Image 1 (cartoon, rainbow, N blue to C red):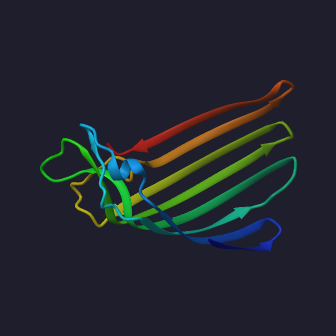
Image 2: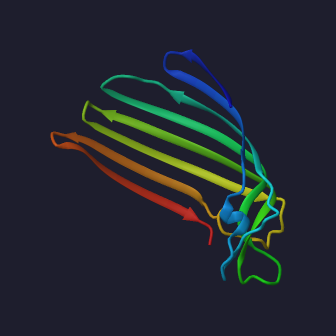
Image 3: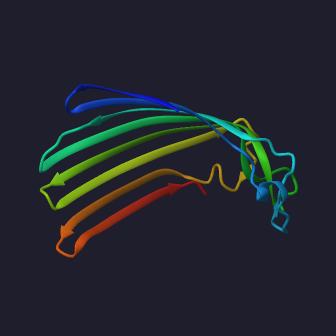
Amino acid sequence: QAGVYFQPAETLRWRAAVSRSSRLPTYTELYYDSPSDKGNADLSSEEAWNYETGIDTLFRGEKSLNFGLTVFRREAGNLIDWVKEGSDRTFYRAKNVQEVRMDGLEWEARLKLGRRVRVRADHAYLRSTSSEDSALISKYAFNHPDHKVSGVLEIDLPLGTQTLELVYKDRKG
């Protein structure tokens, strides 16, 4: 993994990172056998390149408003997933999905309203595409929210911090 950041001003930072990852199949993915799931002893290791870049504001003080924005991409080969495919869709089989690309965008706003009150709002967008047949039914790799929006209110009280969090997820299917 390699990353850099550049801070052209006291209140602004640009950052970027690139990494390579791999994952061996688990025992379950290789050998599991049940009426609904079948392992696959021929699985290959999963490989991926991950890229991200973003900017952050760095305002400090008792009352401050900060923003962060990140864009990212993950290019995976031989991604291990449990899929249903073909005419026999009675069970999931562990499979290497040849090429999967995940693109995303995240933003966050953080507001400090004094020493005891903080508010945060954020949004994440994720889109996945694959070189595989679009009729493939994925158990995990493509089962993610397209959008996730959340808001958090934190108040420091004498007996500890109280947190209220609201989350909305927009998922396909």
